[in-house]
Image (cartoon, rainbow, N blue to C red):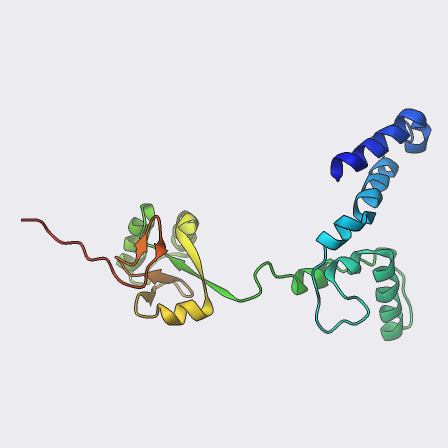
Length: 193
């Protein structure tokens, strides 16, 4: 789709470069490309993200269309009696309404690789660490967090514990496998004699 719309813009530029102020990087050329791209029916369908409770704007994409701009302008005028801005796109509202994953998830720090060492450092401090130490540890721990749905956290409550860092959950040793991920039953390591 992007290739097709780029070819259309290039074709216009080849025939009439003045239409784009003699530059493919001009705002006019950019606007034309995006209007062609996002105006395509297939893209509109792919961009649909249904919204509940907004009968005038059925999906998130419609907030950023001319129709959406008219609806939002009318709503604003109804609340305040005037409207002075040209940019009506509600980026903050869209950010609040859009969720990549509908159900809430919880991050859990797993004892895998360096994650095990980080867990040892967190627990070893028993909550006595400076803000900069806490930030450093959490930054280092990022690759060792996995997300669990809230319902799964309840299922795995036997193997998840709170850490001294507020809001950080830690998976107990033996409940994580590099291939499978979090396991319901603990793997016990036996000593060979």
